[in-house]
Amino acid sequence: MKSKQNSRRTFIKKTAAIAAGISIIPRHVIGKGFIAPSDKLNIAVIGGGGKGHSDAINAWNNGTSNITAICDVDWNMSKKLMDKFPKAAKYKDYRKLFDEIKDIDAVTVSTPDHTHAVITLTAMQLGKHVYVQKPLTHNIHEARVLTNAANRYKSVSQMGNQGASSDGTKQLIKWFDAGLIGNVNEVEVWTNRPVWPQGIKTPTNFPKMMDGLAWDVWVGPAEMVDYHPLYHPFKWRGWWNFGTGALGDMGCHLIDPPFRVLGLKHPSEVESSVGAMFSKDWTPDYLPDSCPPSSRTQLKFKATDKNPVDIKLTWTDGGLRPFHPALIPPDHPIGDRNSANGVMMMGEKGIMTCGTYGQTPKVYLNSGELIEMNKADFNNSLPESGHQIHWVEACKAGFGSAEHKALTSSFDYAGPLTESLLIGNLAIRSYMQKTGKKFNGRKRLLWDSENLKVTNHDAANQFVKRAYRKGWSLD
View 1 (tube, rainbow, N blue to C red):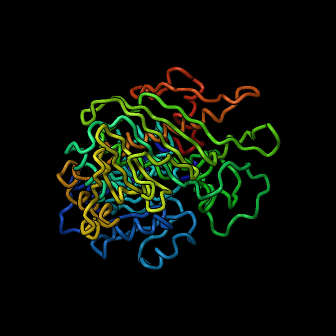
View 2: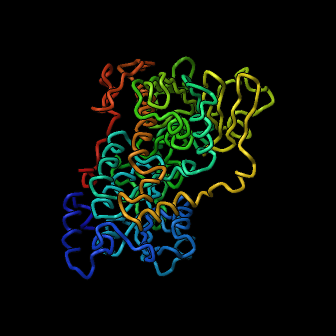
View 3: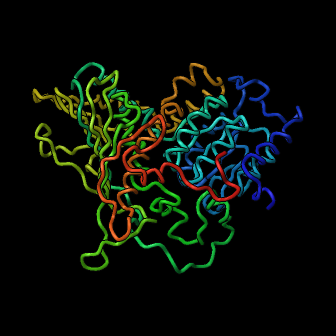
């Protein structure tokens, strides 16, 4: 396909030229970002299987918006969505979609992590509003690019960490702002992820390509590899070429409550260690392509306006979790009901806990008192769909509107959150690398957030951004 050979810049220019005819300019361009509330938003869905299906259904909201086009490299994954919206135009390449369908106001991007940035930036450059699944991007540089681009192109943006809009998270903020646990200097966050293979050898025997799979488009900006079921449809999360591991998968959900409650922005330093992998005695396997089966990462943040003491945030994955603090009764689960995922914020007056998406928030005070969110409030809590519905309403109201400013994960917030967890991945990947016959090992990495670089270990900076395959650059 000719368009596959085009650079991003050529593609944008070509599409902009085609859009020059007044009769086919999208309505939001004519209205300079404003769409009448009585009008329906025209939405293009890019990635319509799995989470992409629910993102589309929630944004559609029983017909209050139009699903105009559906794009997926594997139509088997999107069959259920395509059957529900038979009149929607169908594509396998998002570039062709943007080239041919002009009357689009907004785009949902629910693809593997490695293609989030190239798709989202294209959409914003074309004047579209964007809803992007977590994590916002595959690497730190991309997160900064999208954060700046959302303002430059006046795009109403939202990242798909729906717990940010939950009443549980709002309750945590109220409790902290009321001074219940005092200043916090330590946070523990953990997950049972990965629940897909990690710490495994790169495939060398490749089966026949799946029928109908647009593999070149699926690989997109990443280094080209042959198709393998260990990559598509789900296990891509465990490979650095495509995914961001357990931290990328769950960090935007679990790190969001302390990030939001404590007013965090960018870490000042990071340190990681990973579970070693052995297939023979005494010699750890060197598997730099695969994310590790377990890891532990510590991020340090300076004092904030909301929390005037420095904060140490420790992330643990692979099913490991912190031990019960003495303040929490031994028969009480920490975090989720089965303690598989959770958050503990340790304050001078007590401990505040929650599970995934800010669920089951609790406060354990030093006095022995337990404070829980009213169960009736859970029954009235905002459903997952609200995170998308609020974004749709903000798209209609326009960039800079009150509805836009009220969004919980627009890119001005989601960008720094994503950067922080990807700085953790930078430390994990640095730990896993070898110099000669030795692993780089554990190092405290000092982070310069303004310049996006590690200042005391230059080898780690190779993971700030990626090399893009020809024709897929972010320029």
